[in-house]
Image (cartoon, helix red, strand yellow):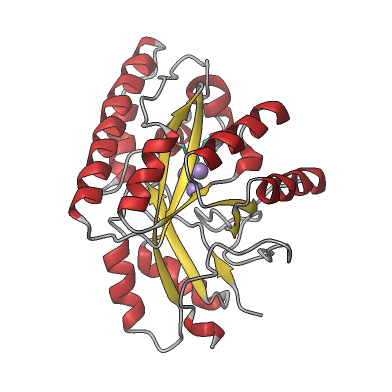
Length: 282
Ligand code: AMP
Ligand code: MN
Ligand code: MN
Ligand code: MN
């Protein structure tokens, strides 16, 4: 069985591993095809490609990105798969998203200061290093400092929607993200539709709009999915004629997620990679 995992992160966004460490882990897990999809950046891709080129074991790296969009007060993530990661227009556009991240980070910091939690931005920035700064870095910095006991509590108390240090993000619209991805030659895939904190009615509406905006596929297999949700996602994919995708959304080694694990697509769905050249398959 060929192992395909089309969603993962490195330390160029909120993943903990370098591209090299991620690739080593993918080898150990016997992954054949791995998409690297950092939040709003493709900065990890060249490093990953160069490193893989030196390895003996075959592993096909799919250049990807996870673009943040805003839709009716929800943060919706769109994966761009097989994008041209050297395309100037695409890089310029992603640069604009980075600038929005930086702006938002400063606003989050101002709110945290008001709530009496100081000095977090500086720490989060150190954790982010040369990568994109995300709320996950703020959360880690706050856990390290002992402000709260774990990441989950930070989101519940400070960074989640409607909480004290939440800043409404100004991400681009879904349709815009899809055209950025298409302009860069990639496929647009709705990330983890089972994770959004919305009713089934809203989820149906999201899929309708995503399909109307010419989205190509959706993740029907991702982590933390109940059998009922899985069934619903499959139904929605078939209804809108979307290709299926599967990804671990791996950020760091832990008990719950692993690269390439349990990602088999339902057979009645056309895989998003149906027209890619998959070396391991021949
Ligand atoms: P951002 O893109 O900056 O809004 O950050 C979102 C990232 O924070 C997500 O991609 C997750 O990695 C992480 N995140 C969001 N919500 C939670 C949560 N409740 N617990 C832990 N991490 C979270
Ligand atoms: Mn993340
Ligand atoms: Mn996501
Ligand atoms: Mn992700």
